Length: 406
Ligand code: KG4
Ligand code: ZN
Image (tube, rainbow, N blue to C red; front, side, top):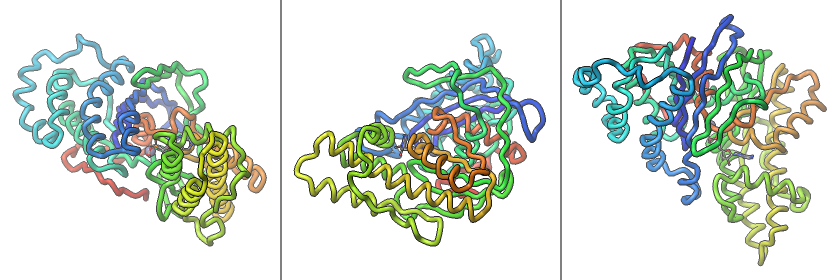
C-alpha cells in the first residue's frame, strides 16, 4: 500500500510518500520521500506563527513540496503527463474551482501543475485534518480533496497528534540520506520493520500547541489523562526565548544555551508538580522567568545561560515527574514522547533515567530528532494505521482546529 501524506497544520508545509508491505499488524515501511518546507524564518519576525501568513505560504509552497515528494518517490516523471490536459481541465475546472474557492493561489497552481498529471501509483491520500490553525489546516485539506477528486483516490483523515505518536515506531535514521537546503528532504529506500508497541502505552505529546499525556490501552485507542491548563510546553520555551531576546522558535536556542548554563542557579517553580492529577501549567513558570529578568539591571550572557538552564530544568522536571507517575499508576508497558519539544535532549535523557530508576521494565521509545517537528511522513504512517477510515467521499472531509484524540 502506498500512501501520500500531507501536513499543513501549523508553519510547516510537508508532503511524503510511504510504502507499506508485509503483515498489516507489523508492516515493513519504506520512506519513498519526506519533504518539508518550513516557514519558521518568516514567522520569527512576529515572534510566533501568524495564521493568515501561514495560509498564504502553504498556498505557495504546497504544490512545489508535493511535486518534489512525488519526484523523489519516483512516482512522477515529466513524460507521465496526461494526454489531454486541456480536456481534463475543461471537464474538471468547475469542481476544482469550488473545492479551492478559498485558496485562489493554490487553485492557480493546481490547475497549472497538478491537473495535467497522470494519477500516480498511490492508494490513498492521508491528510492532517486537525488539531491546528484553521486557515493553515484548510489549505492541506482542500488540496487533498482536489487530489482525491482529480485522481479518484480515497482520503484518510488524520489527527496530527496521532502522527506525532507514530514517529516512535520508526528507527533512528543515523545513516539516512539527508539533504538540508531551503526545503528539507530525505528518503530511505531500505524497508524498516516498525517497532512493536507493548500496550497499554503512554505518550507525552509536547509541542508548540500541545502538552498532553495520552494513554493508549490498545492500538488506535486514546484517552487524554492530562493536559496543559494554559501554555503548551513549547510555547513556554518560545516565550522565555523571546524574553531573553533569542528569537523564534525558542526551544532549540534555549536548550543550546542551557547546555552551558548552571541549572541550579535559579530556583524556578515547578507548577502542579504535586497536584493529584496529570495536568500541567506553564504560565506561572514563564512569569517567574519574566520577574527574574526584570529584577536584573543587566542581562549578561552568563545570566542568560543560567536562566535558560534553570528554566529548562524546571519545565523538564514537571514533564518527567508526571509522565513517570502516570506510567506507574496505569501500569503501562511502553512510554513514548512526541512533538517538537521531544527533540529536547534534557527531556529525552531525564525521562529515560527516571524510568530506568522507577520503572525499569517499561520500554522507552523516542522518535528520531529529525521527525519530532511537524512532517508528513508521520501523517502518512498514521494514515496507514487508520486505513479503515479511508473514504471516497472526499466532499465530506473537513478541517477541525480543535480535533481531540479519541
Ligand atoms: O511539533 P512542532 O514542530 O509544532 C507544533 O505542532 O507546535 O513543535 C514546535 C515547538 C516549538 O515551540 C519549539 O520551540 C519546540 O517545539 N522545540 C523545542 C526544541 N525543538 C523544538 N523545545 C525544547 N527543546 C528543543 N530542543
Ligand atoms: Zn506538531
